[in-house]
Image: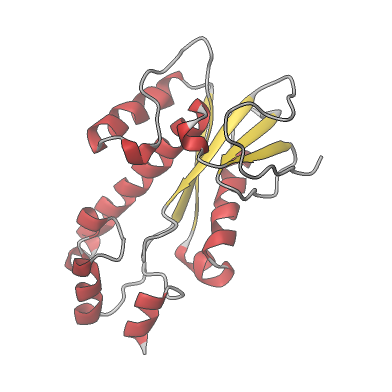
Length: 205
């Protein structure tokens, strides 16, 4: 069955329901100038509740790290997937984000009957799906997915900071801060920079 989309759902009360497992999906890394965009899919276990789930942006790094481990331990299954810098540059950031989401859902060990996705766009999926605006603050499974995606991408930034210390990835996580833009002007772009993004494209001229 093709995906369905409902824009601007204001609460976690949905126009349809289906028996079976529900997965929450969210992404991290649409805005940065470097690195992959990351998506996570989570099917929570109702018998193992996790306290403190919230939009990852509202949590401290320490809270996210603790919840990351708890989600991985208690959820029925989780999946984290990427779309690469090359795919971002080829497809555009929106389509690459949807591709990462599609991969995350497809890689789940258990197949959900329905999928709730943060935002107002849906990836191509074979099961019922609904886009929930601000879903990461409304739906616990989407909150959990947002935390996994954010922690995974932040860890990527720390890893690549060691490889390219001149850019300061560990500090700004790839976003276009003054420090990052100054480093781009001084050192040019590294292989992990998104060449289709204007601040990177400018230093390549």
